[in-house]
Length: 245
Picture 1 (cartoon, helix red, strand yellow):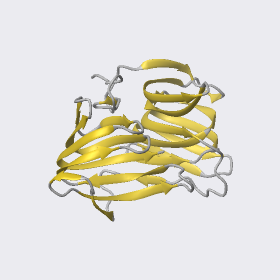
Picture 2 (tube, rainbow, N blue to C red; picture 1 turned 135 degrees about the vertical axis):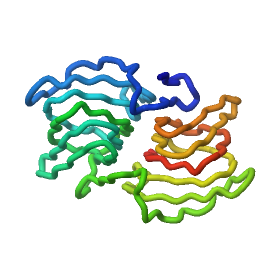
Picture 3 (cartoon, rainbow, N blue to C red; picture 1 turned 90 degrees about the horizontal axis):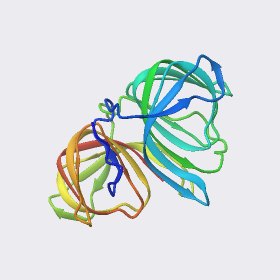
Picture 4 (tube, one colour; picture 1 turned 90 degrees about the vertical axis):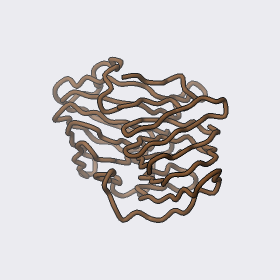
């Protein structure tokens, strides 16, 4: 397995089985056991010495600890089993195929029952007010009742049609998360906001304006930084879990 961290759009093929991970140490604020984390950082942006956007792959062994999330975070769980319990009593059971949008300011505990793996994007921001329950989606590969989001407006060849299911969309330019589907075609691509993508079906090729070619297959985790420009050629209908911020 190989990650492509120096790419214009950093990406990890076969994210579910990637084992070239970095030891991130014991999980702090332990309640029970000694959970140990490892992972692969895909992208990180800092402003004024502070992290504002981060994306990558995270693995954690069993145990329990206190958790406070400083920004909107999308987690797509690829393996394992865990329970997240917010301070208000909300409980989220996660396993392979669960997608959770944790709103900024979420606090509580995490109990990992079986070695857990997820891909994620964290975008720092103010605590969400009156946010309600954390949005959860299960089975993004097969989930139906998709909304027609229309044709890609920058076509070069063909007519790619998009559809999807929105998981969360915050006010005032805050993060958007969900599932996106696109049919075959070739089009110009300009990424206007940082975007995390975990491709779960289909096949496509992104070509950066520099000429770099990025081949996408199922289970490719990718991060497209703001202002990435190039083209996208969809060979087989693509489906991805995404977060835009």
